Length: 224
Length: 211
Image (tube, rainbow over all chains, first blue to last red):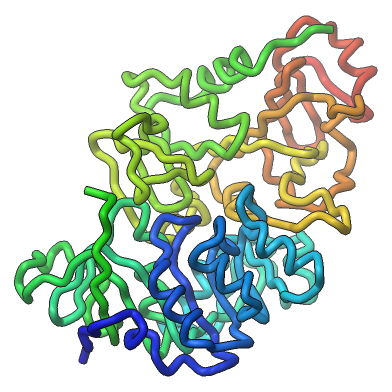
């Protein structure tokens, strides 16, 4: 049963040190910046963060990394023009990096939510990112065994939730939201607005409410 | 030995994409191919962050922070566009549903091995993104690059020295000096740009065949 939370601080309360936190977003699109900043204020340390990128600029995930809260990043594309906080920590050897091809990252998260024990994928076969992993030839093609990525907490940004926690997203900000919502023990979602039950056409629900635990409204001034 | 410029090369690639194809264009040089795809070709562009039917780069008040391409540049949507999550987006690639992807490269080997994600230098922060999924997911993987690197060494090689992105996945290499077809056991030169076959052969250590 979803809880509609009055503040971002209460929405992310209880995240313990050492937690595995799945954070949605592709660059800034769909990044739950206000939830991340509430997590920063909450003080949790030694986090393992799973997210496509390793922070942009000085806010959101970048701030969490800057303040030394992240022990390990699991991501596909850390290096960007504005990832200076991650770059500095990585070069100083104070953050661990598990680099995962983007499709494998997505499928490992999806597999966690779907109860899959592991899967063979052709992506990465014969490359340094498959070193040490079990491989198998399937239909004449090399495959690599990959395991699911479960989260203790998922932080997701969506466009709208109803009072039950059914979610819709906006454009390419959907990205990792639906699969991360399904892959964590506790899923926390920030939305532009919370609407009454029935206001979202059931045909249009992207993340059904059973995946969602906490919702908090964080209205945005930008976006249509 | 002058070769052709980037836009002329993008035009050559665009002309080789069948009407109605579903296509992913990689970050950098391949993005230019979009400028030469005509609307009546019916080609639909896929972007790995979760969209089919991507339109041109957004300008002015079209800019929407929720609508970006794989390079995180604001873009637009075309009529008939659709959005989907990351696992679906990569299922489209890995599942072989895209007709063509066009990627940049550090090196391509004579057998179609691709290296385009990491220089392997110790001080380099590695970033792979969707490159490995794209390289082997599409029905055809085209590479678009200058034949020679800045130091003059050829990027079409007998064996890649940079870390691999994918094994035997490239089918064509479009360069400023020639178009190469990677076929089982051989590399065929389809087209030359301001260079003779013999001059081209002297530049690369891979045995070439004329078409």
